[in-house]
Structures are given as C-alpha cells and as structure tokens.
Image 1 (tube, rainbow, N blue to C red):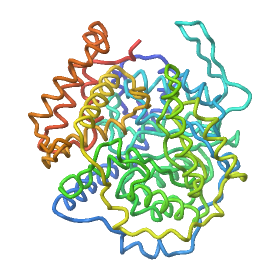
Image 2: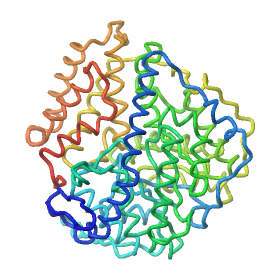
Image 3: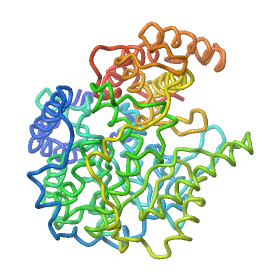
Image 4: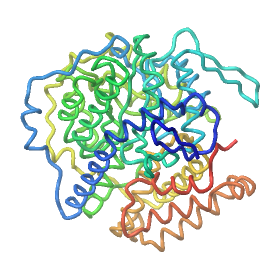
Length: 539
C-alpha cells in the first residue's frame, strides 16, 4: 500500500507496469480532488436510480418529463464543434491494450474510442497499463512488439482522432481508496487521463474528447458538466475545451435526450445510439412487467419498432441542436474460414450502415478494422459532406408508447442455449482479464453479455414459454446449463476448459440468472471475483 501526503489517496493495487508514469503524486492528488468534490454526488445519483427502479417495479411507467418541457421546446443550440470532430463517419472501438490502440488508430477510421469500460476487464494491470499506453498514443510514441511473432507496431502518418470512454458512474475502482472508501471509477479513469493528456491534446487541437456511458438522467449529465468545469479550471484550460459524446444506451436516457444535450451544451459533441446496452436496459428497467418479456436476442434487431423509434428520435434531437447523431455498433467480424458465412455477415453490416446513413446519422461504429472500409464506402456515397446535421428530420414523431413498444418474436430453446454459451464464455474471458471477446462470429463485450444473462433471468422470472410450449423454470435452465458446460468442454478441449475459469463463470451466470432479485450490472459481482484471484492479463 502507498499513500501520497498531498492527497490521502491510498493505492491498494500492487506495483504494475506503467504505474510510475500514471500514478504520479500530482495525478493522484487531482483524482483525490475530484473525488472530494463530486464523490457524494455520485452516491446521490445512484440512490436516485434505485428510487426510479422501485417506482417502475411498483407499476410506474416512463414518460417525457413535464418539468423540463421548456428545455425540449426551447430554441437553443450546443456550442460549435472543433475541426477534429466535424467528420466522424466511421468510428472504431476496442480495449486499451497497446496493439489494439495502434491498430485502431491506423485503421482508417475517423475516430477511435479507447474503451476503459465495457471492452476492458478492469484488472489493475489493464487499468494502469491502458492509461500508460494512452499517454504514449496522445504523444505519438506508442510502440508494440508481438512477443509471439516479433512483429512491430507503430503509428502511421494519418491516424484516427482519439476519444476515451471512462467507466460509468455505477462502478468503483477498488484498487484506490480515499479516506477508506473506493473512488468512483469514472472519476479515476477521467481524472488520470485528463491530468496527463488534456493540455497536450488541446495544444494539438485534438481533444480532450470523451464518450460518456450508462447515464440514466440529465442530472447525471449535469454532474459530468460540473466535473469538466472543475477539471478545466484546475489545469488552466478554457471552459468548453472538453467535448463529450453521450451514449444513449439506457431506456430512461431516451426520454431525456434534449435535457442531456442542454446540460452539456458547452461541452457536447452529440449523442450515440448504444443499442446493445439499450436492449439490456429495456429488459432491466421493465423487468417486473410480465407484458415486457423479450423474444430471443437474435430477433431483437433494428427492424423492431422501439429501436427504430429511439434511433430516429436521436437523429432529430441532435440535428435540431446542431450536433452529431452517431449510429450504433456493427458487432460482426470477418470470417476468414468460411467465405459464404463471411459474405452474409458483411451484407448485414452493409444493410445496417445504409439504414443509418439514410436515416440521417452522421457516423457509425464498427468493432473490427476489417469493417472500416465497408462502413466508410457507404457513408462516403451517401454523405458527401463531413456530416448531415442539416437534415433536421422534422418528419420524425416519437411518443412514449413508441419507445416502450415491446419487440415481437419468439423465445426458443436455441436462443436460451446461445445465451448460456455466450454468457459463460464471456464471463470466463473477463475473469481472465479480457473484456472484448470474439464468439460465434460476433465481437462480444459486457453489453452483449448483459443481454444474455438478463434475458434468461426475465424468462425464468415470468415463466416465459419457449417454442415447445413449456415455460422456462430454474430447473430447466440448470439442466440446459449442465449440458452446455459439457458441450463447451468437448468443443474447447479438456486442457483449455479445466485450466480456465469456467467453474467460476458458470457459477456466476447461474446465480445471476436464478436470483430472486436482479443484479443491476453483471460486472459488479464479477469484479469481486476479479479482485480475489486475478491481478494480471491472461497470457
């Protein structure tokens, strides 16, 4: 344990590579100052989330807020965007390991979102090492040599604009404590990156830029705005230097898009459709209503009315306020071993991106460098300018009923088993230090794993009938889980299976699926397992 005299911040994590450049006394003092100023507010907002959920569980429903009607109807705009963020037609995202950072910045994408949240398992080595790598990326000095192949990686001449996603308000950084309490992970991630890089990025005209995840109200956006003002003043940067894009990836946030932009209007870079987490949030928030049980995850696509409504409302809202409306993630990855399957997957990507650009989105997300040229070609063809904010989409009319329309489809035994396979394998990888995992030709992160486990919980909770007409009980789920674990061991091989963390992953997935109460985020109990056993990445 170490503690800085200036901050009273205790670093509980073990020595790790990069710590000497990341965990400096002045940087830790800055994190401590942020925590003292805003830590209590974080707790208040999390308690507010719990009250909202209790109201929903008691039969309450979402609607647009009457008390903020003047904001929605007002004729205001966000502050002008810097040159570096005017054209965002293709954005790529991934974890903060060195190879990924270099490949993503070199990928030909307009923006790379370096993800300290859903794509990063927060081992101490990952968190600190990721911050160290980002410092080098900002300065153009990042290098990587693959120990297996000897191949060397470095930045090219033209690189993507760097945007960083800190963890959400609901997470803690348990390796660092202030006065005996863990610091909010959001303030830790933001604070370290901002302290070390904000002046450098501002001098280069390339930031600091952020993505803000998991927000559930404009009050949470207000807190981020106050954090930005505090941080800018502390480092002598003008207000408005920070620009932040908010992921609309929770159901309550969809009802407060205008309000969120208004709170951040001096610092806003628009909104993004975080549609995988949005599906998870739809399940989570409406979990007590038997009329809101979803069909198979694979059937909940962008043709479903509630998703089309929210994405088009996002375009209209952003363009009315003169700011970017970013599209969602294409989770497909190239399938080199099967040309026909690869063709089908890429056609899905093309159709998805064509829909987005025609709807008016100003850019889109991909999860793999191989998809960048496909997405770019579609946006280049249909969006000749840097964006299409001029398309106001005044034809869009979305009601609360539109946002709450339950998707149609069926619940199947195959869907159940796919949820089990994805959920268990993702958790096993996460416990081993990997937060972004290719499974069944899709790039899975915490958001898609959340859908898998929350869907199983919802089906069991309401005794939903599967395609054979029989309801899903806890006993039936456990029988399927047993069978899938046997199948996984056979598919992966005994050495890989027995040497991994499948027992813990299976136990956690089972507990989350059959619990009487719903765990708000799977990464919270998974973090406890991570802390007790793993302090490094899997080789």
